[in-house]
Image (cartoon, rainbow over all chains, first blue to last red; front, side, top):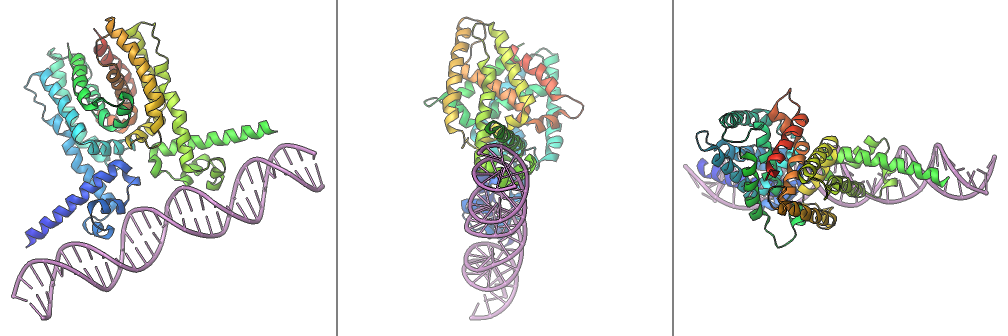
Length: 201
Length: 201
DNA sequence: AAAATATTTGACCGTCTGGTAAAATGGACG
DNA sequence: CGTCCATTTTACCAGACGGTCAAATATTTT
């Protein structure tokens, strides 16, 4: 049946994307090889190219699917909730996302670091629109005196910077903290405290 | 004279390192090519290899020379100065470093992101020692009630994360802010305000 | 000027890599 | 069984890349 063959195809494509994420996030786009991805996915290179037209196609599809997940925590912010609680919940969701999906975080970071050659449109499109919308909410909360006044965009930047730092610079964090410490457990506590102080009126 | 020929060699090596920084920071280690670096430096590939034994040698020398510069702002922190002023000055120095040397910042970020395969020793050596030393100073200041209490290591992480964010994710920052805004000018104002709130007792 | 040394170049090599072509395999269905 | 289609594999190619080598060219030294 077409339905069954489609399901097989979807499984294969999912395998390839999973392998691509694994390899791309470690080696970067240029450093990754089709052979490496194919091997990781358990098939041959030409077989991989039967499901995706090119190496870039795998990469782009990964990035596109990623951005959505990455912005979910922001979308979940409730304008009618308690400002401080909402923002701290957002920070926690973002931190957990970085903790649970470090490969995705690093893949994304690597792409932005290199000038986002494969995401031009998304950044100034979806991303910007979403941030602008929520910046208004933050500004309202500041006007109402519920949280400390600051530029809403930069407040969002600070949340991104801090939460992603623990995933993207994981090696550095661990090297500096030394063994016997649990970076993520400490991050959860410290980052919350950090933004509690930042937001306090 | 040996002195003159040495100076020529030093100039050539400096040219190559400059070109290497330019290319590596944009393409990453794997993405960069010897031809590209050589061309950017204004010489041929074999000529470049006359001054450096390999591509990796250029990269490693860049990183090593970099880490020192990168840690200078922290070294300049004065334990006997006014705590809040000292820390805000540190934040400003770090932000200016990111603003004035974005290529260095991105090169460093890319290396850490990929697991720091060329810096293993430095991170858990020089870097960790320096941070540990200054963590003690911060802890003292907290004990004395001069700045808000928090884990000193994570406080330092937060400074690194925020300041480097503007250099490393420059494309994203600009895309989200839109045209007609000056990211670095705003960053200077907002980051200072941010840490003023964080540190306030 | 000639010898000695430092620097630069062009030609080349082995390997890796993204991608292609065509044959082979496998399964669904009559 | 045989046909048709999807899938997989083997063999291969063209270009890029890191690096080498020997010859050529400057430059310094005697």
